Image 1: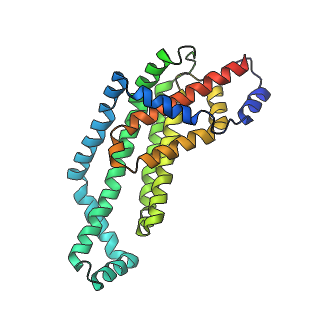
Image 2: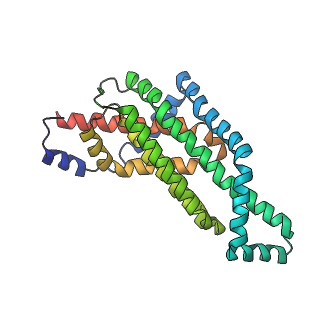
Image 3: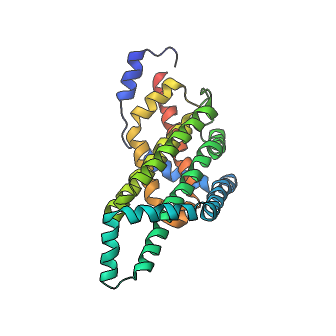
Length: 265
């Protein structure tokens, strides 16, 4: 890779392969997920998410509900919605406020737990996933990456912070359910794509190779993220999705890296 000129790297990056290999990555990930080691790997992010939900509900639900109550009291839009629901007889004045505050609090705490589980999977479980696959399907793809843990940790940190800030700032869109669902898909696509794509190749690819792959296969990485975000809408998927998404991204990333190196030699 060191002998590759800047012009050649630029040319390779522009040779987008589109969605090639995305379906194959999902198929291979399904097979890999059935391996006992990968089934065991499901436990860590699941337990982290479960523990985070329990802790946040006990520790943060009260203060968050109180803060949201103040925001609702100061929001003319929410007050009008509250008055309309009461006027049509759907709720009493007290029940609609309690229902609204509880729902809003859960819409903050559950995604916070989910992104924490995904970050844990990215930093601590992905090395297990990558190690497992590199010993079997990708033994010919040598490891040339540097500072993998540091790069992975920093990436997971900034993606999580942006996700949480963006999620909170776009909560008003949930007043209009179709927009709320769209915003949810966009943010989870963002989280899966920007977190998992880097971790799938950080141990094997050099910085120059990562740059080429992220440009060349950007569409494929985002499509995988969109499919994972769609699966994330189904609560049962929360158990296996952190690890399964890592398997999909690793299959896609290492297969793309193998193909890139074949082209270079």
